Image (tube, rainbow, N blue to C red):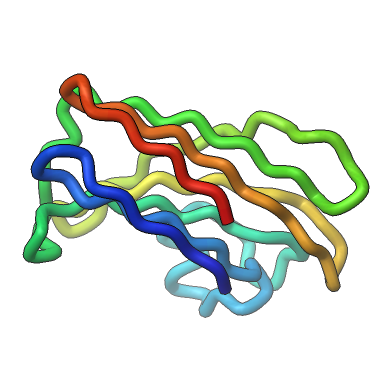
Length: 117
């Protein structure tokens, strides 16, 4: 799995990619994904510096996924809230083994960060 982290004021935005086939059934269910699916899950978390829940406020996320040899495509991110924590997830359907480059632009309260991995 690959990941990137950025700080926007008091918010820590962490993005990571995980093979959907590697998700255990409980996690897949929480994110609304059928377990064992081929492809990658982009998981974006927004927390405070201590790792606790943080109101995302005016957070705006834009993500793209570019599978190797293909064009970049906009990745729709769904907001999922469980246990008081808010995450954002997006799915990229690919056939393993696949190399995918993710780009994430995040803005919040006038601060902006770009991540690529």
